[in-house]
Image 1 (cartoon, rainbow, N blue to C red):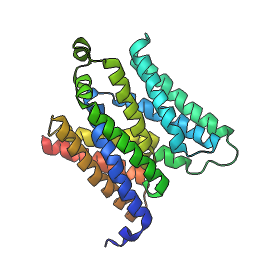
Image 2: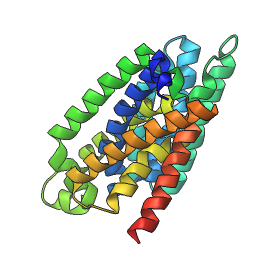
Image 3: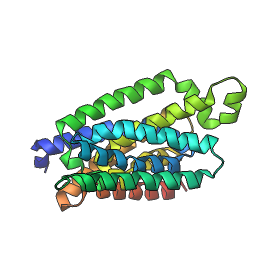
Length: 264
């Protein structure tokens, strides 16, 4: 029954599920509490420009996406706070520009772009050892940053105006949080893809939020739920030969519906 566990690509996929679940539990909790799901979606789609740049420069698209995603997050955050246009308008423009840049870079790249669909729709079964190493390093950076700034992030997430009044540098802390969202996007893009990524960011935390409002417990619950559901999605996708990223998202969505009705 568990013969599939002997395959190296399945083992890598399950390790990947753990690494991405840490991001989902930690950063995803802030995304849900701060209500910046749409903004996170804009960052994730803008990151496609970095993927296209990676193909154009013939470097690992995941590595190229790191500075591009962070820059996109800083621009989106700066425009949201400083420019006199609505946040929705700013996010829509930058969302589209990032995707368009990715398409242009890929169009300028000679030959065929391999694995392009895995960045758009995800394929956890094709994660390489180098991808795993990048994810591990980014996970460590994210966990360390959250630990060091946990009080500041908590304050800004619940009441940004009050944080400013009591003397916290709210804008720099908020921008740092967006940078963590950008790094998390890079971790998640190979698993469910840029288009479906927001589901992994939000659903585990949304399920957990129904049962606790303590931030630490919320992160632990969301991480655990994400590990279980992502692993289940991997197994189902392997057994029925389905797209892994889409299957994981459907499992997450089904779990959210079940938890919602059980809670009621």
